[in-house]
Amino acid sequence: MRESLLEISAHIYKEIKYIVRDPAWLIVFSIFPYVMAAMSYLMGIASSYISPDAFSEFQKNTGSSNVLLYFLTGYGIMFPSFLVVSVASENTGAEMASGTLEQVFVSQARRELFILFSSFPYVLVAMLGLIISYAPIILMGVSILDFLVTMVMVFVGLLPLLGLGILASNLTIKVKEYWSAANFLQAVLTLFSGFAYPISFLPEWMRLVSYILPTSYAVELVRKFIEAHSISYSGLYGIAFMAIAYITAGILSFRLVEKEGERSGSIYSS
Image 1 (tube, rainbow, N blue to C red):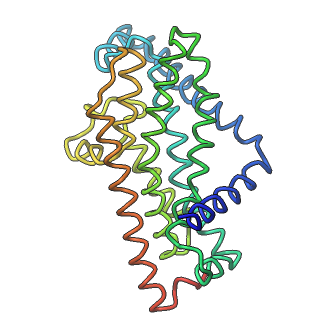
Image 2: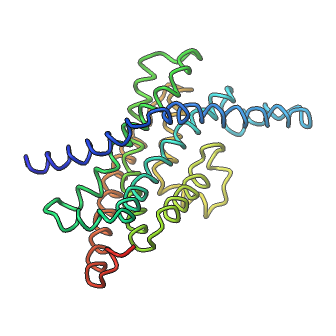
Image 3: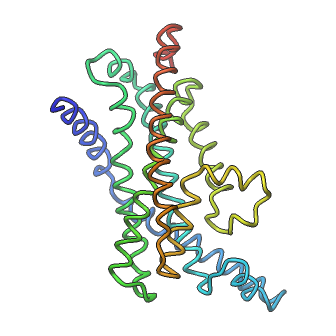
């Protein structure tokens, strides 16, 4: 147990050292949700000149009277989701490019701990960026207690993405291009999570895909809590179950990729 904790702390420490080298990107990361929310809001204003009922239709279709807050909550979860999903494959790709991946794999370090906890610090960084990004919504009438509850919901919502990150890392090992895996998963999250529109607007087959994505539940949980002060415990428990299921599936698939790669020798080639 002690050895596992030391390994986990070593992986986390290494990534934190990388992060603190250039912390300025955290500010940009925190501003992006406002940029995207403002763009969507301005498009709504432009459309209102064509259709005077644009905002009333928005309220009718989304159930939200605060347009800016609706977009801000969605985009605020979207960017941390992208970070958590992409960083695992990016780290694996960087290790492969520098030739250190095989050093990790031939060492006594547990490969599952490496593949999982190398990206965990970025969940914490994503939460820090989200706290900075969401902090001004307190001025919109959200209490500090509600704000803290919202952050807990988002944190739980990001945990299943660690499993998706491992799947992206597995694809990186197979195709040797981390951007391919990360961009594919980011595109799936963008289309099916309802960051900027209600999932009910999607075709039936797209809604079926959204049901297996934790981000779609996280966005709905946060919006419902901020606007109606209501917690969907079933949705929260569902996300927690997804976290266990996705991380387990990611580790099991990693072991398959690992065994096949060791047999063929492709796991160490770049």
